[in-house]
Amino acid sequence: MFWLGAASLASVAAAPAAWVWAIFSPLVFDRIGSLLNPLAWIAFLLMISLWIICLLAPCAAWVTFTRGDQRRAWILMSAPPVWLGAMVLMFVFL
Image (cartoon, rainbow, N blue to C red; front, side, top):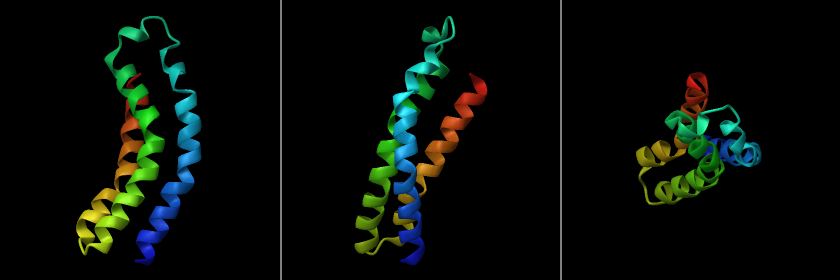
């Protein structure tokens, strides 16, 4: 229960930074021809939705944890770092 709370606090603390990234997400399309790049669109959608994932994942994890399904709670709690990793991976290919 302690570690789930710590992971929830970390996820909620990362949400403001993810929100700032969402504000600057249209900058992905600054290069010429990037509007036609599907990886740029994937990175754009990942950037926009990261802050939502950072807020919804702890809520869903706590709901499933209180229902007694700890494994699914940790799967839900791993969504923000996995989402962030996918976003960083997209930037490598842009």
